[in-house]
Amino acid sequence: MSNSPLFLKALSGERTERPPIWMMRQAGRILPEYRALRASLSGFKELVETPELAAEATCQPIDRLGVDAAIVFSDILTVPEGLGLPYEMIPGFGPKFPKTIESPADLDKLVGPQDAADSLEYVYGAVAASVKRLNGRVPLIGFAGAPWTIFCYMIEGQGSKTFSKARKWLMQEPVASQRLLNLIADTTAIYLKAQIAAGAQAVQLFDSWAGVLSPKLYHEFALPASRRTLAQLSDEQTPRILFAKGASHSMGLVEEADAYGVDWTTPAASARAAYGDLTVLQGNLDPAALYGTPENVSTEVNAMLKDFGPHHIANLGHGLYPDTQLPAVEAFVETVKAFRYADAAAFAK
Ligand code: CP3
Image (tube, rainbow, N blue to C red; front, side, top):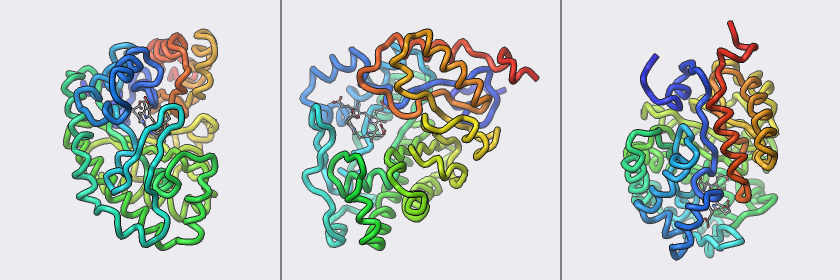
């Protein structure tokens, strides 16, 4: 048994006495101290772009909730900005890009991968400042959006229920789509390597909008682009987590990650059937389960932990919703921390 932190132990495939826990979107959103920090500033981007402030937001859930990993406070939209499409974060609306990709000719105006990644120095600063402030308490996760999800924002310029404009591009401009996905994939690989160099001990790729694609288009475009990014990180000795929300039809098709996120619509048994018992899986509590009472949360969480069995990282099946109440979140964390595989009848060998 190594002395490495629980989260890294689990990611490396070692058996642990309980699963580690962290929550997607744990930095910010639900914490009053995050809202206070945010209210003292001009906006979201000031927080993302000022390493000391980002580090403060990164550490808030560690101080408050006692989770086993931190995720750097940043956003997936830094990469499109680096590529030449700046974003605005509009309160009550979400992200908005004043400029988008409208035609294949627009691709010629974008920045190249190395220059794009080099322009995101403030993110590497946020990683380094977060590691320093964490002071060894828990490992730090770096992250990026997966190429398809970033492609969606670069074409649409804002959120969408269907991302039909982005899907129209795949149909009508397949060659230009491929070119843009490759550009994003290569930029993202350099970007994640730089986060690792700055101290990130694991990285996660968020393919939040994988679920709007048919399996065919997912296989043709999104999946190869994610693999292209992940493959470029294979020499880094840093675990890679892929979270492709809504793509459970394709579980088991990517080999380049060290752990796979499972969304809440996917039964643990289906994920285990697709990936096997030894693959590290992360997830998948329904974020809406946290609207239940702490007792209900605890029951649901224990059932989830038994369903996944070992080689599991406890998490949600997508990010925390902003109106989630703290007692439910605390019940999630406490239930996971009290769990022991050895006590769970199904695993007592
Ligand atoms: O996990 C963490 O808490 C780390 C920080 C983090 C943020 N965004 C901070 C943030 C992470 C990992 C993200 C990822 C992200 N950003 C994703 C992928 C994960 C997912 O939820 O699917 C996506 C799609 C985005 C794009 C984005 N950023 C949207 C759609 C919005 C607006 C609505 C929202 O989700 O809150 C943001 C803003 C944003 N990013 C906030 C935070 C804390 C809220 C902004 C604020 O405080 O004003």
